[in-house]
Length: 343
Image (tube, rainbow, N blue to C red; front, side, top):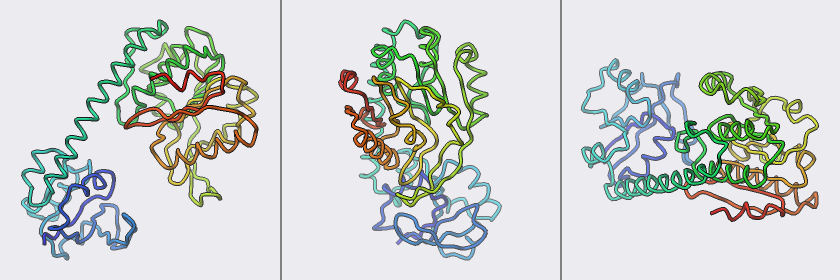
């Protein structure tokens, strides 16, 4: 068996673990740069040992796998500890890297992973083409405005397509958005054209300042409220949830045609619950709510609670989940049923 130390336990590890040939590989422990001493931690449903880099020299291992986007920093740390270069394996999710270390990876799983990446890339191109077609029909979006739907934290192109169609079909007068980003550029363009009321809640002042600097002409009319996040305990789900600070001053006494939710950061168990206390009181008779990242359990549970509130309030609605790889959920009043069959 190949004895492996895994340096990193975040997103890269959770992807690369599916590609390792565990019939030939034995995990010794995880290495964490921020660990001050040896400890155990629950990962993948089991208790595993996590050690600081200083403890590597006391372990018997064959290789160290750098499973993080901070691989360069990890290598510098390992070099200071005089770890031989030949014992360090890159965790880069590239075919050439995995082929070079085929003794560690299951190449059939790697092929499936690579094919999946190709399929996702093709799907992104399809989504982008659809958005470009829909965008051409929205004369209020400046042709020179850069709007992307394939960034790491950005909404998808399908989200942007549905967003455009919602604005075109509903012509809303009062819009609320949680999370400032690419979608905000589209809504700000619509606001400049329509003169609607548009409020945005954002958690990060540095991101807001950068966005405003790069999109100054768009930001003139929008009301942007920076509300740093905090953690609150959710009794029903028994988890800590990331929420904005008090947003009652933002919601005020207004009723909204459309609410777009892509913030704050997601949480385990249930996520982005900020709007729930204001439903249905702050919805107009004709309304639409879109929640991004529906592929995650936290957002699914938030939608479940939202639907529960609507049903208990006797409000009839329709529901549609859009997106193949990056899902989002649309709920709307029955008069806007066409929003559930856009593509």
